Length: 498
Ligand code: ACM
Ligand code: ZN
Image 1 (cartoon, rainbow, N blue to C red):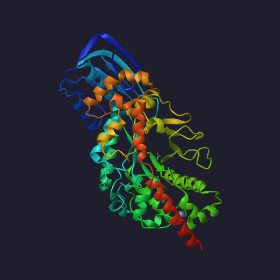
Image 2 (tube, protein in one colour):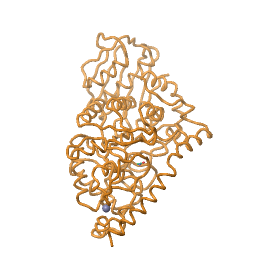
Image 3 (cartoon, rainbow, N blue to C red):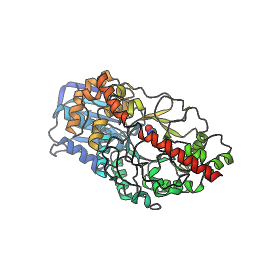
Image 4 (tube, protein in one colour):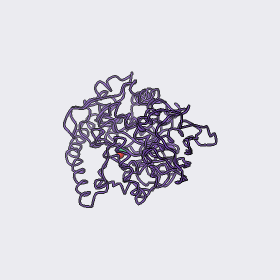
């Protein structure tokens, strides 16, 4: 029985007739050189007489395709996206059938418009070559949306012309609290161009994330006037939520934000941008003369309201540049002051009204979390959150994922299960488990690492120990540090306001 991940919509197999495939030659097509190379490198078959043909089927949706296998292989689609997905399906068929393929017909298209993968390149920098590998891993799973988390407390990862310090200084930290070594790295504008082009070659759109007004310590380390109290602070070298965030009471902060967005929009031509909005501690805003004055001027009741005002304003700026805007869903339940069309990357079931969202549920798709917290079963059995769901996204946060080797072990097999939900609309662990042996052998064939089943579905004791080990790192020192640091700021603010 042919196994396919993600499951195709319709398949008919005639097991009485077979096509022998001992060479591969593609007829004229719309595919990029990189997509063709990926296919041919995988098949490792000699060239010969044309045996894969492409036809236009204008009634098909953008990502829809069909495959007919008889004495030749015919792919029908309305666009290059359909051809890209068809090749990925063919790779799995050729791999399993070992050159002896039953006559078959497949008709396939995705349930969800967005099937995403987020890389946090802020906590750890991933080389262009690794990012390209991630893009190929995405294409393999028919994912089409690369969410590129580029700015963090622990590092600024993208070149800008207007603010050279962001990369000169902001891309470096003195040590990590994982391996205690200095860490640095950033993408030049040319690197970004190369990454975006490569993603497009595989039918993948790229959404940059500029995480504001929190998670901005790297930027503040370079330009302290961006913060409320303008202290000299280093690029963060510890994980945890930082209390020094962008000051939203100063017009100059907006000037900075808009200038960065201008450059991001030039680098990232796809229609999406993410503006963060997560984990914004309001301690400084409540004491800052600029922020409190702005809040009074606007008649906004509290600092949560001030954040929504900030997010809406930045969103409108991005929209005027033709972008669809996303932010993280945290803390925003039921809040009507957030614009109705602002999209969320949504981390849990909560009331986000009719607003569009991408399901990034922490208990299913936070693939940086230990398997003891988010098992393969959890991921596979997850049902997309209710409401206006555009799709699903796996998020690879990297506090504890310093390289792609660990990234692969965290991503797979969970991303395989998520791709089932995103593409076919549903997944169950019972069904996915039946395909696991095939999936692992297919990952092996593609030189992709993964966690084996004992790791991916740990027993209760192993899972609990894993979670303890993981949580211990979040404890003590960051919390204590914040308490003392908050006291310092409170004193400072009293002096300023006196
Ligand atoms: C998040 O988990 N910081 C969005
Ligand atoms: Zn302020």
